[in-house]
Amino acid sequence: MKVVLLETMEGLGSVGQEVKVKNGYARNYLIPKGMALVATDSNIKAFKDKIQSRIRSEAKSKEHALKLSEELASISLKFEAKTGQEGKLFGSITSADIYDALKGKGFEVDKKKIVLSDAIRQVGVHEVAVRLFPEVTSIIKVEVVPESLEH
Image (cartoon, rainbow, N blue to C red; front, side, top):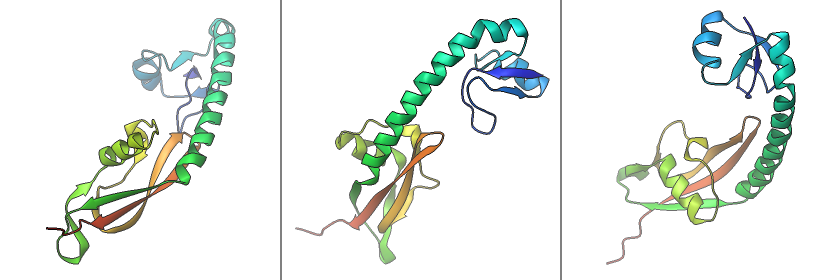
């Protein structure tokens, strides 16, 4: 079934693009969730203006994401954690911890945009990706140091 996308979907296409998908995927997922329309002449004409305005707003969002990406690339986060033998942490540094640290520095980033394949469980410097937009990813440095033993 041919559909016109109302949202950019990674691996499928961008806003306004006409793509061919399986009938069930279109009927059961894309169309009910408002992500796509059946590609008929009347639907294409009716939503062409709407799609164009969305493309313009998405371009502004991408510009904002690029600017934020540059700012994020320049920062470094430092965490102190209790450690055991060989620099292994008691517990871990998660995307929620990174989110809180970014928020504390004045960056408003969606928690789901922080790409951490697995929680950080080792002392050292780690690179964490923050996916701000489908084509815009920023890498931030996360340093984990042992907690100081002051009595």
